Length: 495
Picture 1 (tube, rainbow, N blue to C red):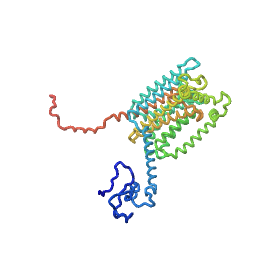
Picture 2: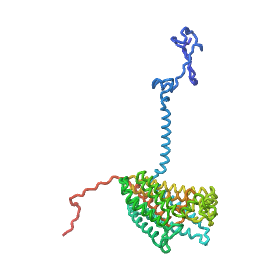
Picture 3: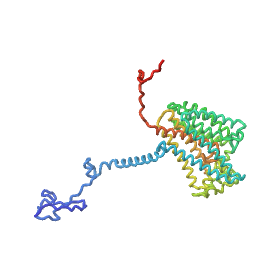
Picture 4: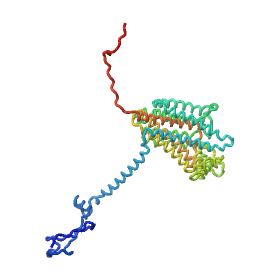
């Protein structure tokens, strides 16, 4: 009779195998093998656990528990994997800002700027189409003319050599100082909205403070970039950038009573110093001093304190009190809903909101185009910031030119985005009314023109990066040595 052990079927997935006991098995020593195999002659052999087998291979364990599990290494490995995954997600998100190439960054900045300017012209026309004087297109036409001048200046700044930007900053700084002095200390200064920040010479008027913003960015970038590593010392970033440069501009602006522009100038100075690498301890002290100065200026000025009281909900009993403008703006935003009431169909622009085409134009966007329109405007600003930041990140050198490009780009971002944040926070009631227009959107020829010129500076940097990326990197050719012998085929002229 065949005495071979029984075979297990191949398709069976049991974890135990029945095998006959051997002759020397200690389980049943008295039982002798007979001629047939019964179930009583079989014993169970358990399959070893892979984890236990690994633990036995590594070494002895206590209490049947794996050493890797007892000392917490598995938990630490899981936490390390989770931390690595979070780091990878943050890196992918940050790649949106640092990614791109010189070819797409140029069109990203230009496209967002043109879209914002066109959006602003449309909303200025819509908000001023109910002019009681019967000149519905006069304001929009003036804004379009200034937009054309700004676009022409933007193209000129895009094409000029980049090395001229520093000298343009010096010239613009001197010009802005003279114009601000004329506004504050000459009869040509024009008062409007509680502050003297307009310069009117004959039929032409404008805001020199807008020119001062661009001049401070270019001049400050040139000065701080020239300092290099010396910027770590307080005396080098303090003079001449902070004093007398930025402080003189700030004092002249405050002499005209324009607190909103002064806050924007403080943001520009802080952004330039931060991008240059100034220590954080100086920002804490400067922030405390700036907050105290702003609070003091509000306290000693009656009309500013009236705006603060309106922001706190005081003196709002009468419909003509300072709360009227903010409340009507909130009504406009609330009535717009998600889709809005339709372009040109606003009801609050019928003399319910003062300065509706200027500082409070964002409320008309929310009423006519709804939440979708306001989100579109904020999205265009976000795209513009991403494009400018990519241009700054595209600089690969750490020389004067590289530092200058980074500083100017950071200053322009702080200027445009900081001013937009202040305007949106003002019309939504997050901060008191300070009279700051929305860049590219609000009515104002000088503000729109200077903002377009600032974008022209960024496009100049982006254009240079495109040209450098397009230029082939070839090895320099060796110059052929001139022979001292005369050429053999040279014809000599007869004497």
